[in-house]
Image (tube, rainbow, N blue to C red):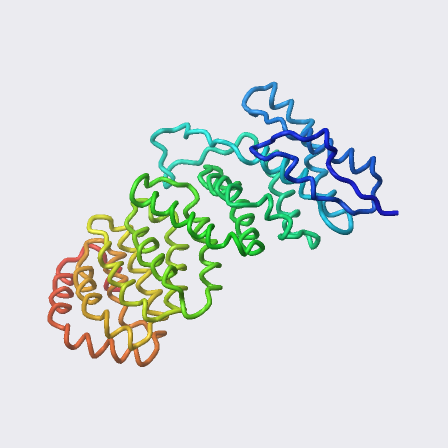
Length: 383
Protein backbone atom coordinates (compact mmCIF):
# COMPACT_ATOMS: atom_id res chain seq x y z
CA UNK A 1 0.00 0.00 0.00
CA UNK A 2 1.36 3.43 -0.97
CA UNK A 3 1.50 6.17 1.59
CA UNK A 4 1.66 9.92 1.29
CA UNK A 5 4.09 11.75 3.51
CA UNK A 6 4.77 15.45 3.80
CA UNK A 7 6.81 17.63 6.11
CA UNK A 8 4.83 18.17 9.35
CA UNK A 9 3.48 21.68 9.95
CA UNK A 10 5.46 21.76 13.21
CA UNK A 11 8.70 21.73 11.20
CA UNK A 12 8.15 25.17 9.68
CA UNK A 13 11.36 27.08 10.29
CA UNK A 14 14.03 28.82 8.26
CA UNK A 15 17.20 27.04 7.15
CA UNK A 16 19.80 28.60 4.88
CA UNK A 17 17.43 31.43 4.00
CA UNK A 18 14.61 29.10 2.90
CA UNK A 19 11.40 28.65 4.87
CA UNK A 20 10.15 25.09 5.02
CA UNK A 21 6.61 26.39 4.58
CA UNK A 22 7.55 27.14 0.96
CA UNK A 23 7.89 23.41 0.36
CA UNK A 24 4.57 22.28 1.83
CA UNK A 25 3.36 21.32 -1.65
CA UNK A 26 6.10 18.72 -2.13
CA UNK A 27 5.05 15.17 -1.37
CA UNK A 28 6.59 11.71 -1.38
CA UNK A 29 4.73 8.84 -2.98
CA UNK A 30 6.64 5.64 -2.32
CA UNK A 31 6.29 2.18 -0.91
CA UNK A 32 7.19 3.14 2.63
CA UNK A 33 5.17 3.68 5.76
CA UNK A 34 4.35 7.07 7.24
CA UNK A 35 6.62 6.20 10.17
CA UNK A 36 9.57 5.45 7.88
CA UNK A 37 8.97 8.63 5.92
CA UNK A 38 8.81 10.72 9.09
CA UNK A 39 11.95 9.04 10.39
CA UNK A 40 13.81 9.87 7.18
CA UNK A 41 12.62 13.48 7.35
CA UNK A 42 13.75 13.83 10.96
CA UNK A 43 17.12 12.28 10.06
CA UNK A 44 17.62 14.83 7.31
CA UNK A 45 16.74 17.70 9.61
CA UNK A 46 19.25 16.23 12.01
CA UNK A 47 21.92 16.90 9.41
CA UNK A 48 21.20 20.63 9.42
CA UNK A 49 23.42 21.87 12.30
CA UNK A 50 26.72 22.97 10.79
CA UNK A 51 30.05 22.00 12.32
CA UNK A 52 33.36 23.74 11.74
CA UNK A 53 35.38 20.50 11.41
CA UNK A 54 38.44 22.38 12.65
CA UNK A 55 38.07 21.67 16.38
CA UNK A 56 38.58 18.09 17.65
CA UNK A 57 35.12 18.19 19.22
CA UNK A 58 33.50 19.02 15.89
CA UNK A 59 35.54 16.40 14.07
CA UNK A 60 34.10 13.73 16.33
CA UNK A 61 30.72 15.42 16.33
CA UNK A 62 30.51 15.03 12.59
CA UNK A 63 30.12 11.30 12.96
CA UNK A 64 26.37 11.38 13.74
CA UNK A 65 25.83 13.33 10.51
CA UNK A 66 27.45 10.69 8.36
CA UNK A 67 24.96 7.81 8.74
CA UNK A 68 21.99 10.09 8.04
CA UNK A 69 23.68 11.83 5.14
CA UNK A 70 25.10 8.67 3.60
CA UNK A 71 21.67 7.05 3.77
CA UNK A 72 20.08 9.92 1.88
CA UNK A 73 21.21 8.93 -1.66
CA UNK A 74 19.76 5.46 -1.20
CA UNK A 75 16.54 6.92 0.14
CA UNK A 76 16.21 9.22 -2.85
CA UNK A 77 16.61 6.35 -5.28
CA UNK A 78 14.86 3.68 -3.26
CA UNK A 79 11.27 4.82 -3.59
CA UNK A 80 9.03 4.79 -6.60
CA UNK A 81 7.01 7.71 -7.84
CA UNK A 82 7.48 11.40 -7.23
CA UNK A 83 10.32 12.81 -5.15
CA UNK A 84 9.99 15.18 -2.26
CA UNK A 85 12.30 18.16 -2.63
CA UNK A 86 11.38 19.46 0.82
CA UNK A 87 13.89 17.89 3.18
CA UNK A 88 16.49 17.34 0.48
CA UNK A 89 16.72 20.95 -0.68
CA UNK A 90 16.31 22.68 2.68
CA UNK A 91 18.58 20.56 4.84
CA UNK A 92 21.13 18.88 2.61
CA UNK A 93 21.71 21.74 0.17
CA UNK A 94 20.95 25.07 1.85
CA UNK A 95 22.49 24.13 5.19
CA UNK A 96 25.40 21.92 4.30
CA UNK A 97 26.74 23.41 1.08
CA UNK A 98 26.08 27.14 1.11
CA UNK A 99 28.61 28.84 3.35
CA UNK A 100 31.07 31.70 3.35
CA UNK A 101 34.38 30.43 2.03
CA UNK A 102 37.31 31.14 4.36
CA UNK A 103 40.14 33.41 3.21
CA UNK A 104 43.25 31.69 1.94
CA UNK A 105 45.66 30.53 4.63
CA UNK A 106 48.49 31.83 2.46
CA UNK A 107 48.04 35.50 1.48
CA UNK A 108 50.76 35.02 -1.16
CA UNK A 109 49.11 31.88 -2.53
CA UNK A 110 50.17 31.16 -6.10
CA UNK A 111 47.83 28.61 -7.74
CA UNK A 112 50.53 27.76 -10.28
CA UNK A 113 53.14 26.94 -7.63
CA UNK A 114 51.43 26.19 -4.29
CA UNK A 115 49.26 23.25 -3.30
CA UNK A 116 45.61 24.20 -2.67
CA UNK A 117 44.11 24.20 0.81
CA UNK A 118 41.79 21.21 1.01
CA UNK A 119 38.39 21.50 2.68
CA UNK A 120 38.53 20.02 6.20
CA UNK A 121 34.89 18.93 6.05
CA UNK A 122 35.21 17.28 2.63
CA UNK A 123 34.16 13.74 3.74
CA UNK A 124 30.84 15.26 4.81
CA UNK A 125 30.50 17.62 1.83
CA UNK A 126 31.23 14.82 -0.62
CA UNK A 127 28.22 12.87 0.65
CA UNK A 128 26.02 15.94 0.29
CA UNK A 129 27.18 16.55 -3.29
CA UNK A 130 26.63 12.89 -4.18
CA UNK A 131 23.17 13.10 -2.65
CA UNK A 132 22.34 16.24 -4.61
CA UNK A 133 23.56 14.78 -7.90
CA UNK A 134 21.49 11.63 -7.47
CA UNK A 135 18.55 13.79 -6.61
CA UNK A 136 18.93 15.86 -9.80
CA UNK A 137 19.55 12.80 -11.96
CA UNK A 138 16.65 10.77 -10.58
CA UNK A 139 14.01 9.90 -13.21
CA UNK A 140 11.39 11.08 -10.70
CA UNK A 141 12.85 14.58 -10.47
CA UNK A 142 10.39 17.22 -11.70
CA UNK A 143 11.95 20.56 -12.73
CA UNK A 144 8.51 22.19 -12.71
CA UNK A 145 8.40 21.61 -8.95
CA UNK A 146 12.11 22.03 -8.31
CA UNK A 147 12.19 25.54 -9.78
CA UNK A 148 10.42 26.77 -6.64
CA UNK A 149 13.63 26.03 -4.77
CA UNK A 150 16.37 26.03 -7.39
CA UNK A 151 15.97 29.68 -8.31
CA UNK A 152 18.28 32.60 -9.09
CA UNK A 153 19.25 32.99 -5.43
CA UNK A 154 20.18 29.32 -5.29
CA UNK A 155 22.32 29.62 -8.45
CA UNK A 156 24.15 32.69 -7.12
CA UNK A 157 25.08 30.84 -3.93
CA UNK A 158 26.20 27.85 -5.96
CA UNK A 159 28.42 30.00 -8.21
CA UNK A 160 30.09 31.58 -5.17
CA UNK A 161 31.31 28.13 -4.14
CA UNK A 162 33.32 27.84 -7.38
CA UNK A 163 35.93 29.99 -5.63
CA UNK A 164 36.70 27.09 -3.30
CA UNK A 165 40.39 26.19 -3.22
CA UNK A 166 39.53 22.49 -3.06
CA UNK A 167 39.55 21.08 -6.63
CA UNK A 168 37.38 18.16 -5.50
CA UNK A 169 34.56 20.50 -4.58
CA UNK A 170 34.89 22.49 -7.81
CA UNK A 171 34.66 19.27 -9.80
CA UNK A 172 31.36 18.36 -8.13
CA UNK A 173 30.07 21.91 -8.56
CA UNK A 174 30.85 21.72 -12.27
CA UNK A 175 28.66 18.65 -12.64
CA UNK A 176 25.87 20.06 -10.46
CA UNK A 177 25.70 23.36 -12.36
CA UNK A 178 25.72 21.54 -15.68
CA UNK A 179 22.77 19.40 -14.57
CA UNK A 180 20.87 22.47 -13.39
CA UNK A 181 21.57 24.25 -16.70
CA UNK A 182 20.24 21.26 -18.60
CA UNK A 183 17.06 20.80 -16.55
CA UNK A 184 15.99 24.38 -15.81
CA UNK A 185 15.48 26.21 -19.09
CA UNK A 186 14.33 29.36 -17.32
CA UNK A 187 17.68 29.68 -15.53
CA UNK A 188 19.95 29.32 -18.56
CA UNK A 189 20.22 32.99 -19.50
CA UNK A 190 20.70 33.92 -15.84
CA UNK A 191 23.50 31.36 -15.40
CA UNK A 192 25.31 32.64 -18.50
CA UNK A 193 24.95 36.23 -17.31
CA UNK A 194 26.36 35.47 -13.87
CA UNK A 195 29.31 33.56 -15.34
CA UNK A 196 29.85 36.58 -17.58
CA UNK A 197 29.93 38.81 -14.47
CA UNK A 198 32.36 36.51 -12.66
CA UNK A 199 34.76 36.58 -15.61
CA UNK A 200 34.59 40.37 -16.01
CA UNK A 201 35.28 40.87 -12.30
CA UNK A 202 38.15 38.37 -12.57
CA UNK A 203 39.72 40.11 -15.58
CA UNK A 204 39.30 43.75 -14.63
CA UNK A 205 39.25 43.76 -10.82
CA UNK A 206 40.56 40.80 -8.83
CA UNK A 207 42.51 38.48 -11.17
CA UNK A 208 41.60 35.83 -8.63
CA UNK A 209 38.88 33.20 -8.86
CA UNK A 210 39.65 29.53 -8.37
CA UNK A 211 36.87 28.14 -10.54
CA UNK A 212 37.56 29.82 -13.90
CA UNK A 213 38.68 26.56 -15.52
CA UNK A 214 35.62 24.65 -14.33
CA UNK A 215 33.23 27.39 -15.49
CA UNK A 216 34.93 27.46 -18.90
CA UNK A 217 34.56 23.70 -19.14
CA UNK A 218 30.82 24.07 -18.58
CA UNK A 219 30.70 26.85 -21.18
CA UNK A 220 32.44 24.63 -23.71
CA UNK A 221 29.50 22.24 -23.51
CA UNK A 222 26.99 25.11 -23.57
CA UNK A 223 28.58 26.73 -26.63
CA UNK A 224 28.51 23.41 -28.44
CA UNK A 225 24.73 23.41 -28.06
CA UNK A 226 24.12 26.96 -29.29
CA UNK A 227 21.63 27.16 -32.14
CA UNK A 228 22.54 28.83 -35.42
CA UNK A 229 22.71 31.62 -36.29
CA UNK A 230 24.43 32.71 -33.11
CA UNK A 231 22.69 35.39 -31.09
CA UNK A 232 24.35 38.79 -30.78
CA UNK A 233 24.76 38.27 -27.01
CA UNK A 234 26.78 35.10 -27.62
CA UNK A 235 29.09 36.85 -30.09
CA UNK A 236 29.55 39.71 -27.65
CA UNK A 237 30.42 37.24 -24.89
CA UNK A 238 33.18 35.81 -27.08
CA UNK A 239 34.73 39.16 -27.98
CA UNK A 240 34.14 41.12 -24.77
CA UNK A 241 34.67 38.37 -22.18
CA UNK A 242 36.47 35.27 -23.48
CA UNK A 243 39.14 37.09 -25.48
CA UNK A 244 40.10 39.44 -22.59
CA UNK A 245 40.57 36.35 -20.40
CA UNK A 246 43.80 35.84 -22.36
CA UNK A 247 45.49 38.82 -20.71
CA UNK A 248 45.37 37.54 -17.12
CA UNK A 249 48.70 36.47 -15.63
CA UNK A 250 47.48 33.03 -14.51
CA UNK A 251 46.31 32.08 -18.02
CA UNK A 252 48.01 28.69 -17.80
CA UNK A 253 45.48 27.54 -15.18
CA UNK A 254 42.60 27.58 -17.67
CA UNK A 255 44.01 28.15 -21.15
CA UNK A 256 43.13 24.70 -22.49
CA UNK A 257 39.45 25.19 -21.61
CA UNK A 258 39.48 28.77 -22.91
CA UNK A 259 41.00 27.80 -26.26
CA UNK A 260 38.39 25.05 -26.62
CA UNK A 261 35.59 27.59 -26.11
CA UNK A 262 37.09 29.96 -28.70
CA UNK A 263 37.47 27.20 -31.30
CA UNK A 264 33.89 26.07 -30.62
CA UNK A 265 32.68 29.57 -31.49
CA UNK A 266 34.70 29.64 -34.73
CA UNK A 267 33.34 26.27 -35.79
CA UNK A 268 29.83 27.62 -35.18
CA UNK A 269 30.42 30.92 -37.00
CA UNK A 270 33.58 31.28 -39.15
CA UNK A 271 32.93 35.01 -39.60
CA UNK A 272 34.11 35.50 -36.01
CA UNK A 273 37.66 34.53 -37.03
CA UNK A 274 38.80 38.07 -37.83
CA UNK A 275 37.75 39.71 -34.52
CA UNK A 276 39.12 36.71 -32.58
CA UNK A 277 42.56 36.81 -34.24
CA UNK A 278 42.76 40.58 -33.89
CA UNK A 279 41.76 40.25 -30.24
CA UNK A 280 44.50 37.68 -29.61
CA UNK A 281 47.05 39.90 -31.34
CA UNK A 282 45.92 42.81 -29.17
CA UNK A 283 46.62 40.85 -25.99
CA UNK A 284 49.72 39.10 -27.34
CA UNK A 285 52.23 38.77 -24.46
CA UNK A 286 55.29 40.97 -24.72
CA UNK A 287 57.48 39.63 -21.93
CA UNK A 288 56.10 36.23 -20.88
CA UNK A 289 57.44 33.43 -23.07
CA UNK A 290 55.22 30.81 -21.43
CA UNK A 291 52.08 32.75 -22.37
CA UNK A 292 53.40 33.33 -25.89
CA UNK A 293 53.77 29.58 -26.38
CA UNK A 294 50.14 29.16 -25.29
CA UNK A 295 49.00 31.85 -27.73
CA UNK A 296 50.84 30.13 -30.58
CA UNK A 297 49.27 26.81 -29.66
CA UNK A 298 45.84 28.43 -29.80
CA UNK A 299 46.63 29.98 -33.20
CA UNK A 300 47.49 26.50 -34.45
CA UNK A 301 44.15 25.17 -33.19
CA UNK A 302 42.38 28.01 -34.99
CA UNK A 303 44.28 27.27 -38.21
CA UNK A 304 42.91 23.73 -38.01
CA UNK A 305 39.34 25.01 -38.40
CA UNK A 306 39.79 28.30 -40.25
CA UNK A 307 38.16 28.75 -43.64
CA UNK A 308 40.26 30.11 -46.54
CA UNK A 309 37.84 33.00 -47.03
CA UNK A 310 38.48 34.08 -43.43
CA UNK A 311 42.23 33.49 -43.57
CA UNK A 312 42.57 36.22 -46.19
CA UNK A 313 41.24 38.77 -43.69
CA UNK A 314 43.76 38.02 -40.97
CA UNK A 315 46.87 36.87 -42.86
CA UNK A 316 48.69 40.22 -42.82
CA UNK A 317 48.50 41.03 -39.08
CA UNK A 318 49.02 37.36 -38.22
CA UNK A 319 52.21 36.97 -40.24
CA UNK A 320 53.59 40.26 -38.95
CA UNK A 321 53.35 38.78 -35.47
CA UNK A 322 54.84 35.51 -36.71
CA UNK A 323 57.83 37.37 -38.15
CA UNK A 324 58.45 38.96 -34.73
CA UNK A 325 58.25 35.61 -32.97
CA UNK A 326 60.53 33.63 -35.28
CA UNK A 327 63.67 35.24 -33.83
CA UNK A 328 62.54 34.85 -30.22
CA UNK A 329 65.31 33.71 -27.83
CA UNK A 330 62.81 31.25 -26.33
CA UNK A 331 63.37 28.03 -28.28
CA UNK A 332 59.78 26.74 -27.93
CA UNK A 333 58.44 29.93 -29.52
CA UNK A 334 60.91 29.73 -32.39
CA UNK A 335 60.22 26.02 -32.80
CA UNK A 336 56.47 26.62 -33.06
CA UNK A 337 56.95 29.29 -35.68
CA UNK A 338 59.53 27.34 -37.67
CA UNK A 339 56.97 24.63 -38.40
CA UNK A 340 53.61 26.42 -38.32
CA UNK A 341 53.25 27.05 -42.07
CA UNK A 342 54.47 23.62 -43.17
CA UNK A 343 51.92 21.67 -41.15
CA UNK A 344 50.88 18.87 -43.48
CA UNK A 345 47.40 18.44 -42.01
CA UNK A 346 46.22 21.91 -42.99
CA UNK A 347 43.51 21.92 -45.68
CA UNK A 348 45.14 22.08 -49.16
CA UNK A 349 43.41 25.37 -50.12
CA UNK A 350 44.76 26.96 -46.94
CA UNK A 351 48.27 25.59 -47.52
CA UNK A 352 48.25 27.15 -50.99
CA UNK A 353 47.15 30.50 -49.58
CA UNK A 354 49.84 30.37 -46.88
CA UNK A 355 52.52 29.72 -49.49
CA UNK A 356 51.28 32.58 -51.67
CA UNK A 357 51.26 34.96 -48.77
CA UNK A 358 54.72 33.87 -47.61
CA UNK A 359 56.05 34.88 -51.01
CA UNK A 360 54.75 38.41 -50.42
CA UNK A 361 56.08 38.45 -46.87
CA UNK A 362 59.36 36.71 -47.69
CA UNK A 363 61.70 39.63 -46.95
CA UNK A 364 60.65 40.05 -43.33
CA UNK A 365 60.66 36.30 -42.74
CA UNK A 366 64.09 35.85 -44.32
CA UNK A 367 65.54 38.58 -42.10
CA UNK A 368 64.08 36.81 -39.08
CA UNK A 369 65.48 33.44 -40.17
CA UNK A 370 68.90 34.95 -40.87
CA UNK A 371 68.98 36.37 -37.38
CA UNK A 372 67.81 33.02 -36.04
CA UNK A 373 70.54 31.09 -37.86
CA UNK A 374 73.42 33.17 -36.50
CA UNK A 375 74.46 31.50 -33.32
CA UNK A 376 71.02 30.55 -31.94
CA UNK A 377 71.64 28.96 -28.56
CA UNK A 378 69.36 25.92 -28.98
CA UNK A 379 70.34 23.27 -31.53
CA UNK A 380 66.78 21.84 -31.37
CA UNK A 381 65.55 24.60 -33.70
CA UNK A 382 67.69 23.21 -36.52
CA UNK A 383 67.07 19.53 -35.83
